[in-house]
Amino acid sequence: MTGCRQAGKTSACRGIVRLAATRGWRVAGVLSPAIFRNGVKVGVETIDLHSGQSRPLASRRLSRHGGLLGYEFDDVALAWANDVVASSYPCDLLIIDELGPLELEQGKGLVAAVEVLRGGCYRWAIVVVRPELVPVFKERLGRPCRVVDVGELFGSAAEAQSGGPTSPLEVCIFEKLFAPAS
Image (cartoon, rainbow, N blue to C red):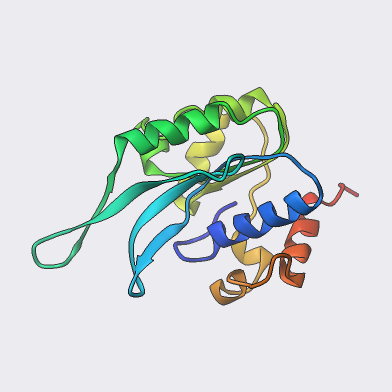
């Protein structure tokens, strides 16, 4: 699953996880929602979808003048999240949110993800990848995969923030993604 920043990729994954759980699917992997304070994104946490445990993963680094310098990752939390991914199968639904520059350009972070995906011990997998990194991801994966832009699933980030445990929008997304091929 791809889409620009703040397009609703993590929100879509969260909704898909809720619906998969209502269907009795074994869900595993990691979800990485933003951490906000006073409406400002200050970091990212990572959640083990099987156990529900979470860890602060990264915090924003600001310059002395308040400009964004990027993220500072917690090495212990990264190792923990990588272990979660490495041990996440077999499962019905594997979620990896997300593989970014850290993994695909620097060879750090969730480095176990590509091997787990190649192993195929899951029924379905959703991997969040930014649009500019999709070609790199596909090359590393080395097997066919379907790329879905989160914008094709719903029209706006506001729609991605749908409420309720299983909103009609989430059901529609779930059915679009997991419908049998015709």
